Amino acid sequence: MYEEEDFNLSDRYIKNLFKIDNRYILIVTNKELIAFNTKKIHIKKY
Image (cartoon, one colour):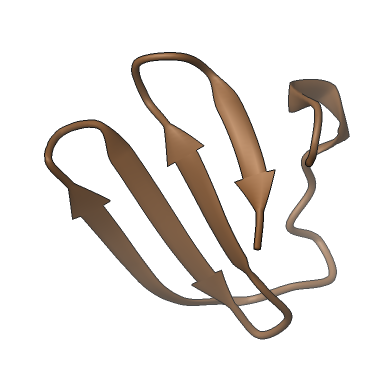
């Protein structure tokens, strides 16, 4: 799990963005899937 200040996309490129139920934003990069909970600012790496 990333902390907010550690999040960096400099060595990744975004392939797709998804918004689910006005609560989650999913970012698919060339290396991983990252989920943002927009109600609580928690960033999870999958």
